[in-house]
Length: 299
Image 1 (cartoon, rainbow, N blue to C red):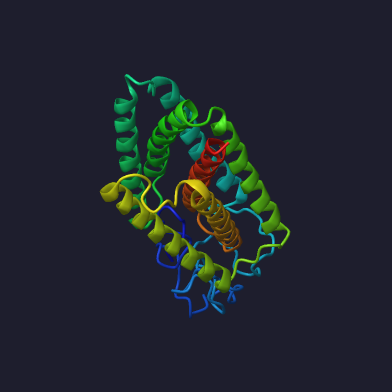
Image 2: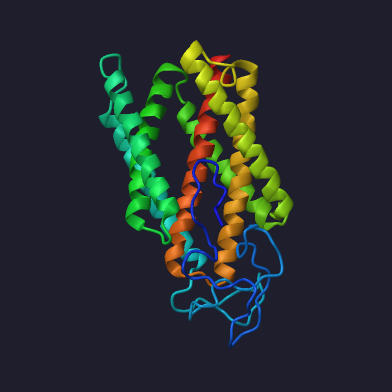
């Protein structure tokens, strides 16, 4: 399937990634395993088999949701945590370096903005290349993280300097709070990621992105803030919606990771989990930064 990350599409734990099997044919040597939400065109379809049965280390006799013992090349939560820490750490390090090395004072603002936009474009290209690759590439993922960090560092420094001093720390803390809140809600079962949830989130995200593109086009050709979706009362409303959408995509990411672990996904796919989580957290941070900037600017 194509994961539904709100920023980019990436290849997730699916039957078309080189490790999966025919969703309608149980594997020899083991019964059909649980309900795999990634084995068909619908990411939350039911009644399918373990897509990782061809992985010799994958569990063949356990139900979805049952704890698995780590064996051989099977992805574990520790693998996801370590790869995510590396990817997010790269974003943070390059963001801090760009904050200090690319000044946003009046004399250097244009140059720093140019570098930031260039870094964002490179990050986009690297993310798209990874999205279409059949297997994860740590070099591409870490490269994406590095260039994304450059973009975030310059944008954050500019917002802190010219719009709202101290808002960056608030946005970071807000992003961490959203992550922790969604994780707790997901583990407690308060959020049920199923077909209906997936469909609702995807429809909302497509509508949100379409409105943002229209607003951008109006801003480019008509000047100002376009249709006003990024300032004033409407800006606050759409900022809140953006953060909520990011939280929903975090839940989808958690579900994807949980299923990958339970189905015995190959260890290398922990990089895909790190890739998706990083993009979602970047989305939430940017929306949080924009929202807090509007709120403080109105004070």
